[in-house]
Length: 47
Image 1 (cartoon, rainbow, N blue to C red):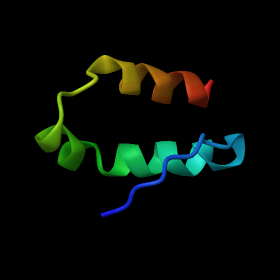
Image 2 (tube, rainbow, N blue to C red):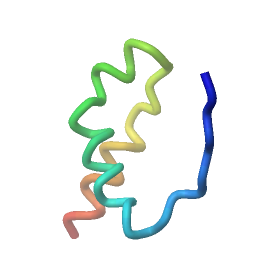
Image 3 (tube, rainbow, N blue to C red):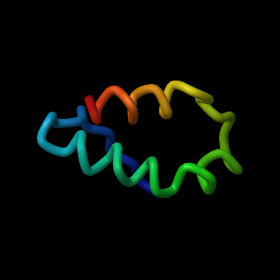
């Protein structure tokens, strides 16, 4: 398997963040939760 990593472009940040929020429970089954930081970011983005 070949993996290529690229820097996140700002234009994709919103989509990536939304994807992570929608799939948060799935990801937390695989890796440790980042806890409240995601919740805080979500609230701040609405302000």
